[in-house]
Length: 105
Length: 406
Image (cartoon, rainbow over all chains, first blue to last red; front, side):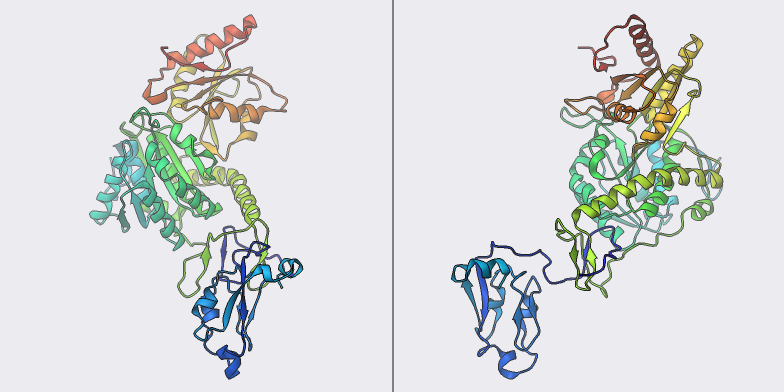
């Protein structure tokens, strides 16, 4: 938990993860990364990262392999669209159990 | 006569007084769209900029919506911004009025009070600014041209202290196009009173920020792990700022008096009110008219006085209670109407009296809509009528319309 030291009298923020709040249960599809195709995982270095650049919710971490924070991911599919390797598939939420959906896992 | 530096006594209109006040405040960006009866404000400022008297960016915009948008952008970069409008122009920028307030930007806007269409009218009442009272701006009402000039300068000090935009309101034509003697302070005096604007936050390319971004219901951690306010917390701070502004408005007016020798009463002003049992309450030039009615009533032996509202938002409820402590009868004159209820000043005054020890009879009057002339003898007559009703124990009508010929 952070400290409450927000000195702002009007709303302002740096671009940050989850700018539009926790997703909840309304996402219809989620990104599933195939790390055998993803360049960063294949080459073992921080590279490409088009998904990280374009994710409007900043939920993708520049780890090797990359990770997606499903608690904030809105399922917009931009990462899947921009991936040059076709490493990201958008999988319907119906494939996952309600517990997983609710937990953002 | 005006000195070589443009200070001293001059005979000018209310609109010229407002433009001069903005010039003396060294505004840096002016974005305004002309609308009757505000037009001479924009013309005078354009002249100042074009002649080199005022070093400012004058942005010609195609609408009031854009005028306030430009002021919001300018103020966000740290510039002192000014605009002015009237009636339907104010309504046209309504969305941005809320943005400026929520963004806590110290913009000053002149509102030359004019009746709202329909039907089309260019004449005066106070429906325009009253209809924006809940947007979160400070609203100051002026009673003469001297007060207009002084209030614009004070407004920047107030706005830049509490970070709330200020609307300086004055009656169209009755003040805007009427010439009166006005004493202008020197630029040196104003500079001592109003230091350059040092903004709280500046749009800075080196430090990109989302400003006024989507803000959720609950506080959230930012990327540094700092818990940032949710929407409701920011609104609470906004209300606190307006509450604090009551002190600021009074203090700024008092400090202005030290520099120029003139004060305008802070939140409200009184005329022969100290021992008055019958009190007129109104805002703007109609309250000045009431002082003439009071003189007539005093001549008849009726202890009458005026309490003029200078700050309508924040509403001086506590101060009004104190000012009305001897009152048996309060006559409120609203130049606007919250349709389906009553005059806004009247409703707010009644709310301020609620639960207090002093409970005078309050009589609300709707007057001067759409430029209908309000005469002192009519106001005095309204007082006599109300006094007679009180004596006879007659239940009054919930609201009286002054000189409505229906």
